[in-house]
Structure formats: structure tokens, C-alpha cells
View 1 (cartoon, rainbow, N blue to C red):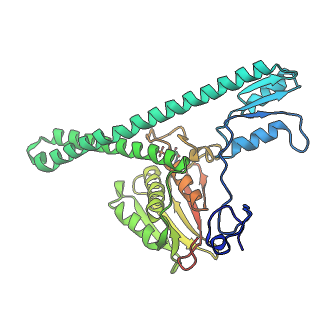
View 2: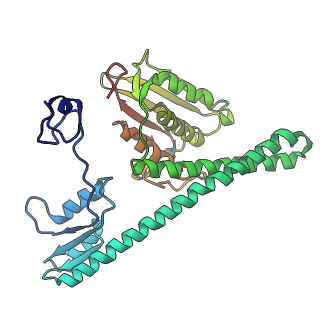
Length: 342
Ligand code: ADP
């Protein structure tokens, strides 16, 4: 019998309470996170610095401003508080009015930041329509008038087309990442053959630029898994796109799809420039890019998108890389097969 807070079928069948979060079928009630945290430093079991570090490591809590309130008044105590992510520091004994004024200031700042982000988001979103229209016109020009244009003009039109396409892709990445971050992109899970999906991404990328080659290795017949095929396709596209981008001309890329009892794994190995160990974590963060030795441009959002999608599926993503040898970007998805979906 279920005593959860939701009307799940067990409770509907029994029509009994009291409510509790301990239901295997329903998730516990989601409480909105606090808007600001006042944090002491000297506390039993875990001190305030450690608490703050843990808050900042949690994707859902890291944006909440933390104000430290402590009797410690040494400069180094304060510096450490800012170092672990605090936004302000008040020393005890404190005056209520002072704390109140600081709380108000930080709440107002947060509100303004949110307004700024919403506005930026709106502008970025609204840029997509005119850019799509420009892209359409350029494509039509190339298609209908292409033969009547001089070679140089054709080249300019093609390059303009590509630039507009890149801008639309950038805008889409920015919007997708914020949607995923806000939890507004729901997974459309359906049974999916990951082998076929990987194969179709490789086929769609043909012909590979600069005589690069791609070898797809699939380890036997893989189970059909229940995933959002559209999103996972874009993850594979991103990893393959990067592998091709960073592999020198005539170089080879390998995509391996394997499975174990608990998960399915896709790994894309390139023979490119590689990534230094100190950069390997950063590239999965928003706008995280390595100083690009080959001067290639991008948004730094592709891998952030991949990480959000894979983690939303309950999977993991990572990279193994060696400078000047190449990189393997891999991700795993839990093996929830179509006979036993989530
Ligand atoms: P973008 O490629 O648009 O910059 P990504 O999030 O896809 O954004 O990648 C972030 C950064 O990670 C890239 O700028 C690049 O420095 C590095 N990177 C990604 N894939 C590879 C790769 N296969 N080989 C070397 N560096 C890579």
C-alpha cells in the first residue's frame, strides 16, 4: 500500500493516507530551493566551508548565494569564505539591520541577473527566425542562380550560407543548454537500437571532410534501450563532429558501441591534437574551451549539452586523452531495455 503524497494507483486503490515521500513509484515532493543561505562556519560534523563547497558542487544548488556569518574575524577566514564560493561575510556579533541590508542587496542582485539572463535568452531566441530567413534566401540564391554567378560570387554565397548555418547552430546550442539546465527539456523515451542510431549518424556525416575516415565497430547485437533517440543522436553527432574537426586530414576516427549487463557504451576515438589533463574537466563546463592550438572556433557548448543529455538519462560521460596522440570521448547509458522501461 502506498502512503505517498501523489495520487498514484496504489493510493487511489486504497484511498488512505498519511502521505509520505517513501514511495517506490512516486518521487518525493519537490521543494523549491532557498533563494539565499546564511551559513555559520564553526559547526559540528561539517564546517561552513565544507557545506558551501558541497552546495557549489551541486548543479541544482550552486547558484544560490551564500552569506557567511561567523565569529571568526581573521582576514584569512574571510578570504577562505569567498574562495569556497561565498558572496559576502558578516562578523558576529552582528546587527540585524546590517544583515538585512546585505540579504536585500544580494537578493536584488540575483533578481537583476535573472532579468538579464531572461532578456539575453529572449534576444538569442528571436535572432533565430531572421537568421533562418537569411539562410533560406541564400540557399535559394545558390540553388536557382548559382550557375549564372561568377566563381568568386558562388564562393561568397557558400561561405555566407555556412556562416549563417553556424550561427543558427550556436543559437540552438545556447537555447538547448539553458532548457536542459532549467529542466524544461523533457526526455521523449522510446525503444531505440543504439547500433542503428550510431550507424545513421556516421552515414549522415558522409562525405567526411579532408579524406578523413570513420570506422564503426559494433559489438554483436545490442539490446534495444529506452532513450530519447533524438537527443542521443545529437550527442553522438557532437562527439563525431568534434573528432572529425580535431583529427588531421586523412586521419582516422573510430566509433565503438559496446554493451555490458548494466549499460551501453559509445566511444569515439580520434587521432587529433589531444587535450591536456588539466583541461579535460573544464571542457564539459559551459563555454569551456581549450586554448585552441589550431585556431578553430566554436561555442564551447557542445560537450555541455552532451553531458546534460547523458546525465538526464542516468548515464556518464568522460574523456581519455593524450596530447598529440588523440582522445576518446565516451558515454554510457543504463541498460533500461524496452521490455523493462523506466
Ligand atoms: P566547441 O567545439 O564548440 O568549442 P565543445 O563543447 O564541443 O565546443 O568542445 C569544447 C572544447 O573541447 C573545444 O573547444 C576543444 O577545445 C575541446 N575538444 C572537444 N572535442 C575535442 C577533440 N575531439 N579533440 C581535442 N579537443 C577537443
